[in-house]
Length: 321
Image: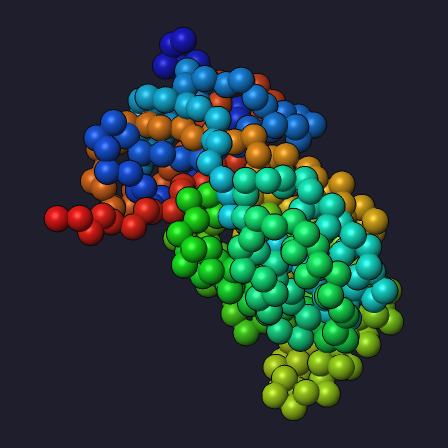
């Protein structure tokens, strides 16, 4: 294929530009995790190195290898337990339990909730029964959600766990939220740690549920000043929108918008299928190990596809002498 053809294919594909953390010291190249979706959002399988094109800091790089990503994942499952869900929590809990089965054995799942605050419910486990039992104990808290705080907590835990394939999957409403952490800072943390953020966003339920949550939130004196600020400026809505849209796009994740709590389960299944069918693409680079190129673009020599890319976390340096 001529160079002009490669550039045209790169332009046709949906490419992601993101900051890069170099992940391996081997002179053969650096890695990037890539998911390729067809026009229906279904993962494209069977691709080889020659199907990929990589441009780093404005220069074409040689792709030296591509293979299915088959390493175990660490998945942080974040469940909205706020009053903004109204009476929808039982359906969300059922979707979360089904998600445990979809993830399957071999991977670790950590459970988090975010009602009046971000809570680490379980550490990262392989025991499906224990995880489902923990989901069953979740209950509604009549406050506004704190998704961004939960994302930040989970990202730190994934780094602490040394996850080689770190993933966050959140189920939340799309009303307002009152996290102390800003979306911008949380997204930068996800990128730096190589975490893929994915979300199932449920259309806001009845206005009465939101009003109840707002009223309960305002009853806490430590949150009252924050609530007045959010309600007057719409800051919470903007922060949540940024977290859902930019957070998924800039970390190689995916956002599923659904219109009901009943649609959360199939949406979670779609998210997991995209996470499962990814590639580890290795490319040659002149960038020194540990240095960040200005940008990285990944394309696929196919028409009508969407490319989701993220750089893996940097493994800890060896302490051997």
